[in-house]
Length: 164
Ligand SMILES: Nc1ncnc2c1ncn2[C@@H]1O[C@H](COP(=O)(O)OP(=O)(O)OP(=O)(O)O)[C@@H](O)[C@H]1O
Ligand SMILES: [Mg+2]
Image 1 (cartoon, helix red, strand yellow):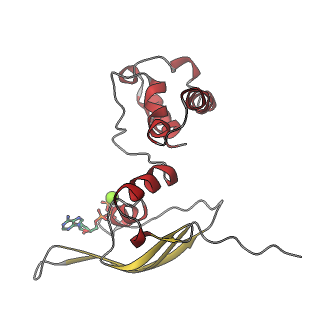
Image 2 (cartoon, rainbow, N blue to C red):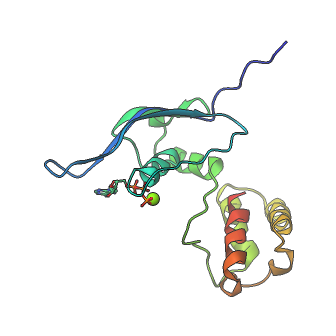
């Protein structure tokens, strides 16, 4: 007997997004549909200007499509607004930004546990999880260092720990 496939974590249907006004209107997304299921690793590939960042901003609830629907774990994202949207983004996504966005004057651990703090995870638990993530990324000895003083590769790993 086989168990039924779980509902997709992300389900995008016919997403459209345009920038600007006529006659300079630019259609960045022209009907994008796909599903991502638990455990899948997916890369979005395309040439520069093809709409990857535009799509990522929709998926991460940082921007909304003009038309089309996006379901996250079965929830229609159009039903999310304000605080609920922010809470969903905080709870659902781990972001690794190219510019890092580490707070240099704070410790590595403080940077890593910030999303958990926002999510309301208790002090002891977020410290435990933060140190655990940093240990796995071979940054255990840098927990108390200021983020400013990390090397480039160490910063990359610190933001991955924060996205955990
Ligand atoms: N605010 C905007 N106003 C007008 N056009 C925009 C705006 N933002 C993006 N675009 C256009 O939309 C298209 C898609 O941009 P997007 O940033 O999604 O591309 P990308 O695939 O991430 O590219 P890259 O690989 O260079 O990062 C591009 O042609 C871009 O010029
Ligand atoms: Mg981009």
